[in-house]
Length: 258
Image (cartoon, rainbow, N blue to C red; front, side, top):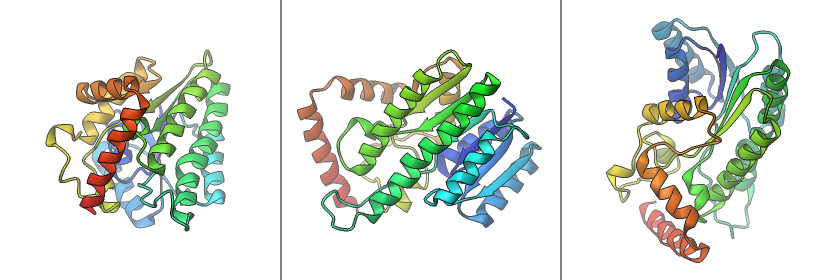
């Protein structure tokens, strides 16, 4: 693959994808909100790996910004071979809150933008006969804690559906479903994570390497690490009533960590 576009490419899992592709000599298109951090990240990757790094300053909560990134994905000038739909954040608002603006923001960035960019990349890659689309979901999609869980459940279903529609075109679609990953994601959300056993935490770089192996094998879903594969398998086969009870317990624990 010659060029990868990564949303949220300056931090966390997105930055790990950027490092992984840069290490393979793949040119990058990084999309993020913060222009200074974007420039710093691009300069570092170019300095360390000698790759071309294009940057797009875009807040994916804004639909005009979504369109600009979609236009870049459909462009035949320096075409994009890989899309990583990674941008996201924890939606901490409750489902009973009168103010639903945090939910609206989550829908824009983690549903509408994913749909918009996935469609743009899918059309362009189908036309060229090859490409990878990686949509970052979460194992939390298998529980029922909050709107973040619901959004990530949509991402997983959407990703597999997009893969069905692109079957036989040379375009591979994979949903990445990580567990807890050591990034700044949780601190930004105000989640301490102190009650989470150390064995359940994943390293972002290792997670990305595992994901890329799954993509290369044509897997529609990637759940990195044996421990999270087992946890996911258990959650998928557990009666929903028990999953709801487990989700309630997890929610109470996270509330105590605020």
